Length: 208
Image (cartoon, rainbow, N blue to C red; front, top):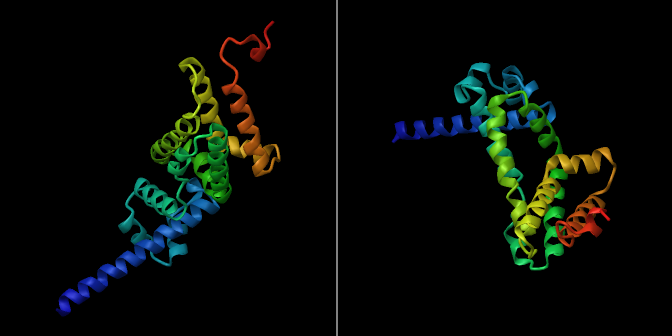
């Protein structure tokens, strides 16, 4: 019994150490970005030896995976399921974009750092790319209520994908100085206008 207790105690201690290391990685990724996060920095932040960090995370990929899982658990992306219950297409779009843009506001530093560094770190890019593609499925949910020909839906989907991107939010909020509600409204108006403007309509395209 004593042996079993000691093993349990040791396993719990190891898990606590691992958790401290993961939290240190997340904090540093958010503060300075993955590319500027070092093993030495993680060890100092977690209060452990560098060898301990390597023991739990032998390579960068394992660190990135643990960081991503921990961050997404603490900051889950919006659940699109409730949006599907909104039949009015404009209201669904406005609701979805509002929740997404609020999420980006809460997670801006991490998103900005990770997207910046993913272009330089292949292991990080391999983790980020599927997440971004999964989020782009939101666009299908947002435009689903609109009844329109497939050729028009193609344009609508492209516009919705653009609207939900973090980089679009960043451009509207940080580069152009818009507030959240105005940024949402701009995207809603653009997509709504596109939805009511069939392909080939001269009055929409400006052709005469």
